[in-house]
Each structure stands twice: as structure tokens, then as C-alpha cells.
Image (cartoon, rainbow, N blue to C red; front, side, top):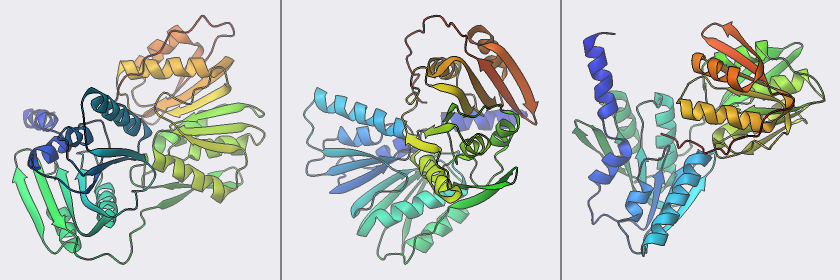
Amino acid sequence: MSRNSKKKQRWKKELPPAEQMLLEFLPPEWKATHVLCVQSDLQPLTTGLIQRDMKDSRIDCFSFDKTVANRIQRKCTLLQEGRSISTEWNILCDSDFPTGDYDAVLLPLAQQFSDEYIRDLTLSAFHCLQIGGTLTIGSPQIKDYEYHKFLKSLFNKVTRIVSDTGIIYQGKKLQALVDKKNFLEETATREGENLLYAYTQPGVFSHRRPNQSARALTKLMELSDDSNILNVDCGSGIVAFVAATRCPAATVHAIDSNARAVKCTEQGIAKNQFTNVRTELFETGEGFSPESYDYILANKSYFSSEGQGETFLQLCLRALKPGGLLQFTTKQYQWYANRMLDLFTDVAIDGAVHHFMLSGRKLENPPSEPDLEIEPLI
């Protein structure tokens, strides 16, 4: 990597998050009657507004992610317990934006969001606004010609404020759009004589892209019928669907912290007419019932940290029955492989074009399990 590329990467990491840009842009006296704060992570936005103590205002915090929503709820509760706050607040988690006549929507965007996801979020936020309501967007993107042009198609006037840290956009809704664009994508995968359908939306893993990690997992995984199978971070649900097809007498439990992923999996269940697949929306680290599963299937394509990797392996150990098998795909396999040798037996690694499947079996007589502390999201 060139020196300029490394410098550019460091500069991106040092940029303040879009949530902070929005808080700094809104003056201390700013207030609105009904505010929607969209949050994709734990950066302070809802909590920052609540601490301003805006009398006669109501703030709704919305996230697709159950983990983010629950942890912001806990932070807001602690704030309220520690001081007298007159601002009403509510935490929402769903697969779609809430329906409501908001007079202000705050939308922070992240560097890693795809262009399609950004447009989807923007249109959803626009539809939440009442006529006369204001959408304020914080974006780390600097090259924004197409997005600025898109915003001009929604608003008669777009205020655009550029700084070294990013761009703030603001527009007032003067008229409603006739229809809201549907970004749902249907894909089909052949499994033996069956054609399995899966759905994704922006924000769900591998939307409109070949899911190579799922393909690697389904190609290499070994299952037996009449078993309990847990699919962690199910995404579109395609891994769960393949497992349910290969083992029609098995029970497949598909879980995810992303409400959109759970909805997409439910749509795939209905389309494929599965009766042995069920879904649940859980906060990260939940849904691992002790010694309940014969198999755990997961896609861990991106390695977050050793702490989160350790938590994942320990949770799987807890959820597997003695002799149960963990099977998952990852790109960064070295740490997992070394740690699994300490925790599992029959550890195996199979390579499949940039994705590796790791498998390990829980001991028949495992030692006592440690108390787990889930590492916070970053």
C-alpha cells in the first residue's frame, strides 16, 4: 500500500462520526415536537439530544439492529435515572421505518454504507416526515454529486454545508411522493432437485452480491436428519433453507440481530413453504439456549476482535449438546483455528476460495463453562 493510501485510511478513521456532526450542527436551542433519530450503531445521537432536555418534545430512536436498540434503551434509562429529564423518548426496532408524522428526522450515514442502502434510508426517512417536516443528514462522503442530485429530486431546496469532516444536508418536505421504491431482491439457489428462493434488502448481508461465504458453508457442512440446528446471523436465510432441505426431519432455528434479516428469512420460509424453519430476532449473544443444538451454523466472514470471537465460541459451546458440531465460515481463520484447538475436539479447516470453513465438536464430557461478558459493539 502506498504512503498516500495509508495516509488517506488514517484520515478516514480520524473523522468524527456522522452522529457527532449532527449534534454539533444543531444549535443548543434547536427543538422539534416529534423527532426520529436513526441509529445504526452506538454513537451518541439520541442520548445527546435527551441530555439537552427539550421540553414538550418526543424523541423516537429507530434501529434495524436489536443489539443497538437495546443498548441505547439501557443508556437512556440510566440517563433518566441520574437526572430529571423532561424529554419523552422511545426506542424502536423493526424491519421498516416507523410510520408517523415526524416534524424532524435525523439521519447519520456511515462510510461503509452502499449507495443503494443510503438511498433506501433517505427515502424511508423522507416518507416518515409530515408535510413541512425537515430531514437533516450527516454524511462522511465528500464526493457527493449523485447523492446531492438525488436529494434535489426529493426537496425543492437542499441546504448543503461542507466541512473537512463531511457534509450536512437539510431539506424541508413540501410534497409527498406517490410511491416508495422497493429495494427487495429475490435470488434462487439450486439444492439437488429443489430451487430455493431467498430475499435480501439493503442492510442485509450480501445484498445483490453472490454470498460466497454461505455457498462455502452449504457446500462443506455435514448434517444429520432428526436434529436441532441453530443458524446464527441467518441473513437472507439461505443456509437455514439448505439445511432444512437436506434434513427435512430436522428443526432449524434461524436467528439474527437485524430485523430486516429476520423479515427476509421469514419471506423465504413462506416462499419455499418450509415447515421446519423458525426465526427469532435476538440481541447479539442471545438465543443460545444451553445444550439445545446438535449443530450450529454461522457465517463469520469479518473478524471483529478477539474478544468478540471468544464470546462467539463460548456461546456456541454453551448451546451445543455434548458431541454437537459447530460449523462456520470466515475469511480470517487463523485466530479461530488456534483457539478452537483449545475448546473443541475434531477441529477441521476446509478452504474454499477466500472463505474457510472451520468445524469443531463439543466434548462429550465438557468442563464447566465460564461466565460470559459480551464485548460491546464498536
